[in-house]
Amino acid sequence: MIPLAELRRFALPHAHAQGIPADVIDRVMRSLSTDVGDEGPGAWVHEWSSLGMAAEARGRDLDAVRCYAMARFPYVDGPFRQAAQSACVEAFDRWRKRVRGISRLDLHDGENGFACWAAGLSTHNRLPLIIVLGGVTGTKEQWAPVLAGADRLGAAVVVTELPGVGENTLTYGTDSTRMLTYLLDLLGRAADASRTCVVGLSFGGHLALRQALEDDRIRGLATVGAPVRDFFVRAADHTPLPRLVNLTLSHIMRTPVDRLPAALADWELDEERLTRLRTPVAYAASRTDEIAPPSDVELLERTVPHLRLVENDVLGGRPDRAAETRLWLLSQALRMTGTAGTVRRAASARARVLRARHRLARTSAGDSA
Image (cartoon, rainbow, N blue to C red; front, side, top):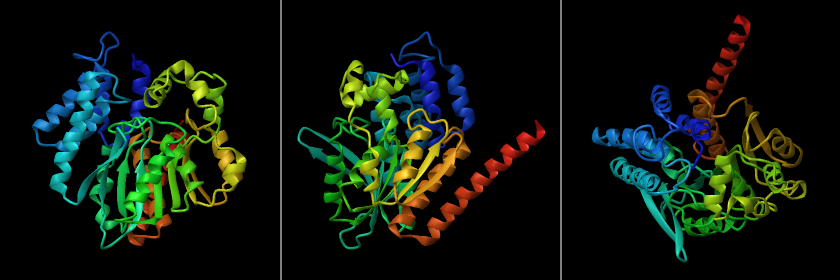
């Protein structure tokens, strides 16, 4: 069973990132019980799914998407989370049909495959491409606001999921870069894939780093908390990891937990490979990240020739921090694709304002202590 204490801790940034109001998050967290499973009042899936159904009944499909995405967090482990996953996709599909301009792509690789939501694709006006790739727990539906505003960005936007996550039925492994290769080959018909920037979250950023080393179509990478080396070194050395992380990786890699150390042993990116990276990297780091430690940031600073770094104390741990990080990632992606100067500058300025407010609040708190 997924530990409730870790569910609370790891899910909080995801709730903030989706814009779920703080009072709603607090109400759900207070209603949870350790004495129940997945069904009934007090259960994680039940509480979030109930909010999703209530939002659907009021015709608020995007709110329903957010709640169902939390209900299926961190991965589908049975019928209740599967129902939440399906309801999340269905609510998003209803919402995007009203918004217009957002299409669905269903892609197959043998018996398995993955899905994408896309905006701005056109065979007649091939725009630079931004691919958003989530981490080991994040679904593509949480990027609805970016898709809805894609017509102002001057770029095509495609959001998808890491293998094993959400609707992606591929297996996550060292060869998962094949998925990005396939996607870029396909999207080159309806976007300028030679000018691609990947926004990769956590392990999605790690996958994009691997791809960028081999694929010069990737002109930029904007990431938050991507593990680079030391997470994989620790895992290979049997250093204890949070149980939720172990269970999630085991699920998407289709590998028993006790075999994860061996399976992750050769995933790290070393100094020699990183010094060969010519792709600009914008990296948002947290000083308290359990997946991407400060030593990984120091490694990037020593090796990556074109690195733009921003560090915060807790990325996404509060609504303002989540908004700041999201805006910063978007502004960096647009900068690296060379598009939408006005929008990029506005997003970058808004991120700076939020960052300044945070510093002021922290200073004021220190003065009053």
